Length: 382
Image (cartoon, rainbow, N blue to C red):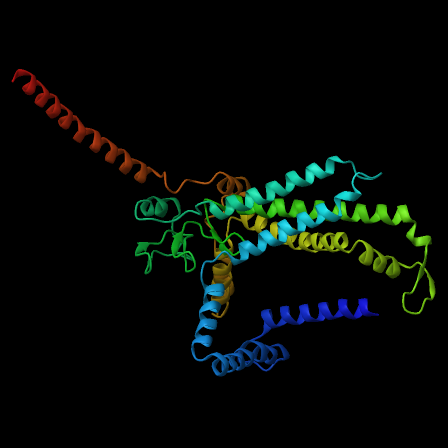
């Protein structure tokens, strides 16, 4: 009974948290709105009052500063959490799952294959974290405005008030990174970096390899669990209730409870991989579809808002039909643009300016060398 109560409690609590996060508003009257006000308005207010009484006025200010740092500033907290989850999950599986390998269903090679996949996950994650996403600068902004022309639908010629630069089409200023990004997709907290033209492929590879490790981990875990059930012949076994001492024949729920009690860590990691694998599969396919249709997460939001605005007008439906995505160049070109992107720091004007600068430096150095040689000759003559 405890197993069902605990599982049900987790499901209900998780569902409520997700519902409050997605549907709760500070000014509504629904159940989620009221719950939002309780947990996100009244509780923090009471907490601050309690901190003021116990620790003085500095305590609420420190709490606000901490909240601002965690939620509204670039910080490595989620990256550390990622390392804890992925590294901890892999080490847990190594400690509790690998002792069951090899077995009649799994070759010992799976230990090494799993390690290689884990290394690929961490390597691609770090590359996505550290790669330049495609920062718009004063030296490349003109070239980028030619590469990405304004469509006069969702992008028009305008200036970024923060960077004081003209904004190329498909670009956006990220308030967390405090830069403008070419072909901006979104800011990803898992890599603590923006996803733009230069690192979009690394983000997709990040999703792909983590989908692979989740699918592989859940497959290995399920096979190990099946081997244990078969080896111990659990479905023909008789179980004794530890409280009532009553003897019970095996059922699916009794076998699951037994596996949780004896191989809990393997079962936990397997279920975690299966759930996260489903989430990652959906997220990965969604992003691949965005690439297929030649748009980004940021642009999709802009298109949806534009269509909503047009639909409010009398002839809005006709105007919506007339919209055209000029950045959709066909499936192959769209994917090539992502996986073989332009280098925003080696564009024609920028390259020409650097070449001119180098030639200017060489031209200046020639007279200096001649002057130095002339001085040497004068010294020899004297």
